Amino acid sequence: MIFGVDAIIDGEKAAAAAWKSVFDPFLRGHAAVHETTFVPFDVRADYLRYLRGKPRLEGVRDFLAARDIALPYDDLRGLAMSQREFFLGEVRRHGLVPYTSTIALVRELRRRGVRTAAVSVHRDGAEVLRRAGTAGMFDVVMDGLDAPGTAVPEHPDVHLYLQAAQRLNTPPAKTAVVEESSDGVAAAYEGAFQTVIGVDRTGGTAALEKHGANLVISDLSELHLTDTRVPARQAVS
Image (cartoon, rainbow, N blue to C red; front, side):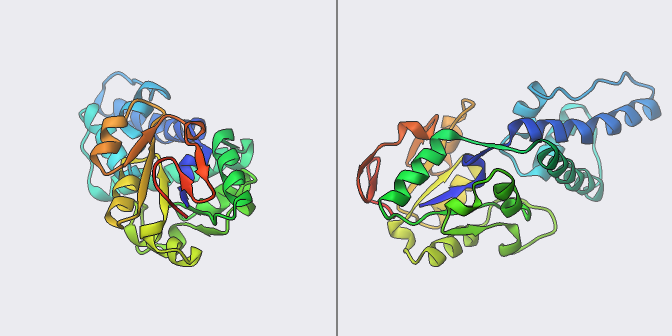
């Protein structure tokens, strides 16, 4: 069973704080240059509406478009890159907390002999797992350093999931994937994995289903193992 790191770790607070560290100085400078009112980044409303669950570059573009700000690609890329550095700073200072329901599920899977993998499109995904004290719980850990393309993490790539399944020594047709983002779900769907489980914590069920989730739940505590190889409705490994 393959888990996206976002379904393992609660990184929302750190991510939102990092975006505020990126956008507030930029918005303040932009307002000064254009003689407009500085409106700071809202760590809840702006984060949830424009950034959560999206590739960073896409989120930057969407947020700035909402503020009627257009930037060249390189400037957008620079803002996206700096967010991850701020995020890691937040993680290194304050740590991260895993979702208790995910950890409980992983422990039960391992008890039953089901091998597990954790994957992230970000190059620091393995570090994030270590900081949360969860890296040792998985048979396979893969991040953006293992994925094709490393300039700016964009859409999760199907090859990352396929490589994880290969390292687990299980074919995609007998492997389940758990993801929170629509792009992660879409990548798993493209890989023809047996079951793609979307975790919707913020009301995005329709998007997860549209991108290929066979099952959408709000928390992994809702996923019940019916025997040693069957989470929910379909046999997986």
